[in-house]
Image (cartoon, rainbow, N blue to C red; front, side, top):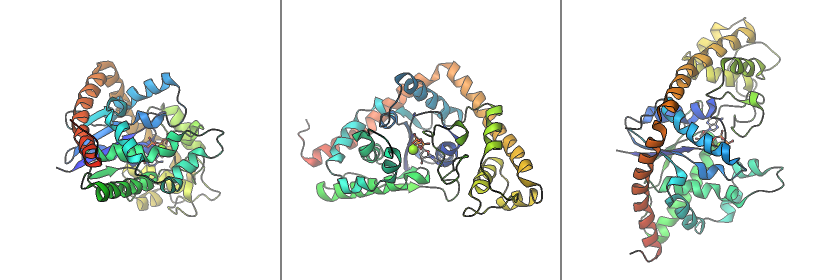
Length: 327
Ligand code: ATP
Ligand code: MG
C-alpha cells in the first residue's frame, strides 16, 4: 500500500482553501493508501503564536480532521510535537541543505516581507517539512499549489542525502490537483486565501456562521462587468468564486455560466452562499459532536504511538548511515 503524508498548521481557523486544496482530498485517499495526517504545530511557531490559541487551534484542527470525514481507524492522526523525530531529523537535514536553496523560497519571502524581525525557524521551515515527509517513507504528499516549491526542495534534499550516505529515504511525489489547488482571497483574488490574512472577509472558515459566510461572499471582489464567466486572467475574482461553486456545488463551470447568463453577480453570489452554508453544515454538526465526545485526545495519543514507531525507524536508518553511534 502506498504511503501518504500531509499536514496543516494550527496557526488559526481552517478555511475553505485548506479544505478544498488539502483536507477534502485527504478524505478521498484514506481508503486506498496508508495515510499519516499531521497537525504541524511545530511549523506554526515559525510565526508568533499566542500559546492559548495554539493549544485551542491544535485540538480544533484534530476535531475538524475527523469532522470532514477522516476515520481514525483508517488513518493516523497526530500532533507533530508528539513525535520528537521530526525535530531531530530536521537538524540532520539542515546540515545537508544549502542557504542558496532556502533563499529562493517564495513562502519565506512573502511571510517575512515588511516584518521587523523574522525567526530562523521561518527560514528553515522547508527543512522541517522535508523531515516530516521523509520520516514516513512517504510516496505521495497531497498539498495545495503553494507548497509545490517546498516539495521540490524536499525531493532535492532526499536525493542528495541518499547519494551521499546511501539509500535512506523514499523520494516523494506531490499530489496537487489540477483544479482548486489555489483558492484565492475573497478580498484580493491575486493572493491566495491564507489563514494568516488578518482580514476576516478574505476567507471563509469551516466553522463560520451562515451570516459571516453571507457577508464575506457578498463583499467578495469581482469586477466591473456583470458576466459570470470563467476567465482566470481577466476575471480572477469571479473565476475563484466559480471554482468554489463547482467544487462544493458540483455544477460544471459551463453549467454555472449558462445558469447565470444575464442574471449578474447578485443571483450567483446568493446561490453560492447557500451552497457553502449547506456544505459546511454537516461538518460543523459533526465537529460539535466530536468535541463533546472526548475522543480527540484518545485519537491523538494512539496516532502519536504509531507515528513514533514508524518515524523512529527512518530516523535511526538516517543516523546510522550518517555515521552516528547508534546502540
Ligand atoms: P498560513 O497562512 O498560516 O500559512 P495556510 O492557509 O497557508 O496558512 P497551511 O496550514 O500553511 O495553511 O496549509 C495547509 C494546506 O492547505 C497545505 O496543503 C496548503 O498547500 C493548503 N492551502 C493553503 N492555502 C490554500 C489555498 N488558498 N488554496 C488551496 N490550498 C491551500
Ligand atoms: Mg501556508
